[in-house]
Length: 307
Image 1: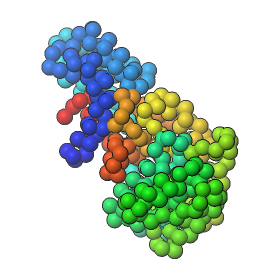
Image 2 (image 1 turned 90 degrees about the horizontal axis):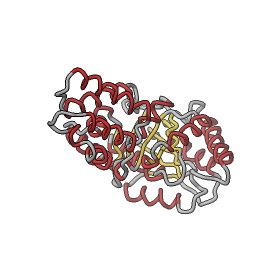
Image 3 (image 1 turned 180 degrees about the horizontal axis):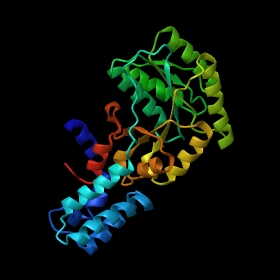
Image 4 (image 1 turned 135 degrees about the vertical axis):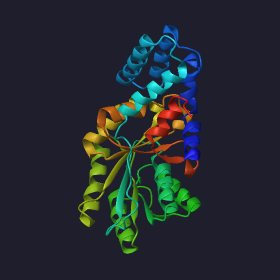
């Protein structure tokens, strides 16, 4: 658990420093004051926690400060952490890896190009493999130059099973073939890397719907998971992206990537707050093991610098 927390803390270093650099008094041993509360407000907005969450955190810290003018920064941080925990209650997505499914459990990875969707698909497959599960990858982003080759390269590096075709192939046909292969080989999971961009948004949504229809010819319940992969560095812009995909595809989960390189690590709070879609994993680095299960406790402690 300590190792996992360290990974979170390291991954959120930029967000933590973005807040802590401005709020040394808040997180230190000194009593807070009106000036440090203003600085905290600015830092929370900068990290993209949004108006509602920022106001809730500040309201509770200010109420405590009003009662006790000697309130120390460490105590203020704990109050902020408690508020954030409350806001994120129920946000941890849990993937069932304990039972052997009759059919492959399909996870459709959705998201725009550049979100880290393809690399996340490979990292997720590797993670499940490490947990003793059998996994097939489906390279269904056949519209983007090098997407299939990128997934193949990851599959080779991590020794993963992959079903792929050539660029420009029918992505739904690849998904169909991949499901058939996963089923015949008795695989536990099928992870489908879908297209991230077509000529228009309508085209993309139709392509995703087509993949879904084809998968359901094999298994009416597929894809059981429809996860949006969002780039955490986009901040609040990712909320609008999530809304569009949710309306079209009925998302069941989120994976937030690139959080190790951004000071906007609060954006996932806004997405969860608005859409109430569980967060399954966070991307905290380049390596396969840097895809970490989302933990509210670890996230909150890392954000507020609490050991």
